[in-house]
Image (cartoon, rainbow, N blue to C red; front, side, top):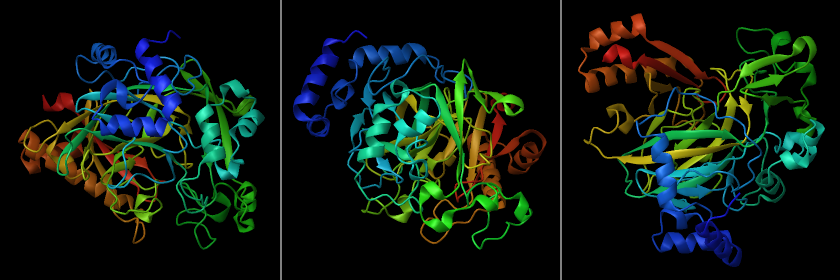
Length: 461
């Protein structure tokens, strides 16, 4: 790869000062664009690249997969954003999301773009041995195809002591400060690119989790028998207290062109890639400790987080109510494909490079759907996406996983949108939703479960 003068200067500074010191100096000086990251291309060139790809607004059908073109080690290959942010071992959070008090590790102007190298948690978790070189090696993956940042995080993460049974699994990268964002605003997150960093992913099912999980008391959950629990009860080794002996299941998947393949022989299955980030959020938790329950990375909240909506891929926009100065945007849980519901527990998890445009929407500007000032909302070229969560602020007092609650909230948010943003009589809107809109289970595995609606834009034209 040809190295530009801007890249070389930035790398020289980083090598001399250390990345964290360099970032603090750049942020303190008010540097945006290229200087805020140390490894981004010049702001002018990167902005032109992103603008040419997205001059018409959203870039295409939501969920369109980025194509794997080779291993993307940290900072290598094409970087389209104004700002580049890698997953540095001393900056990521493993299992938790940033609070409103978090220190930003990058900065972008409103309307600017950021490219983030995100790391998947699968292959580095404690039940997999916390050694990605060894674990992926068992799947036939050579060292060259194992990401250096994944290796560094698995071996050297020390921001807090990990507890496999308490902490979330996700590696969270950020937060990114967005200039001009204030509480009461909305952050519009446009996903411009989602590119696989490696040619493989992992789909995991863990005891006590997923749609067919064994109940906490040891019996079967309502609606199925004990012999229908997955993974099978006979393989449940959680009583050992040793994660590698839990009997959890991880299925390896290989990318072949624009599809993934799992299994072999008669069990071989092939399905399309559909890359997107399961976690995109803004800081909301008020806690100051890194491991407060309300900052756990598993349940989604009103600040987004582990929202797991498969339509939020390339070409989508995600709107989140801002609760912190600078919004403090973060990502994680990169997915290569996911079925709505995510029933086994995980999607096809795999590290991605994402490029996002981050835009501050002020109250009364008309730049964001009205619902988004109090609740997550999304759109693609084809559809508006009202969202409902079962218990978006319940992390501290226990979690409700009632899909009926999530469904009702999604319907109410759809009605509010149609009435307040499009002037549709509420009774007529209710009838329309019943006759023409689809409501889909987002996921049933994140403690707080989700439902989202798909309202065709063509119907409102």
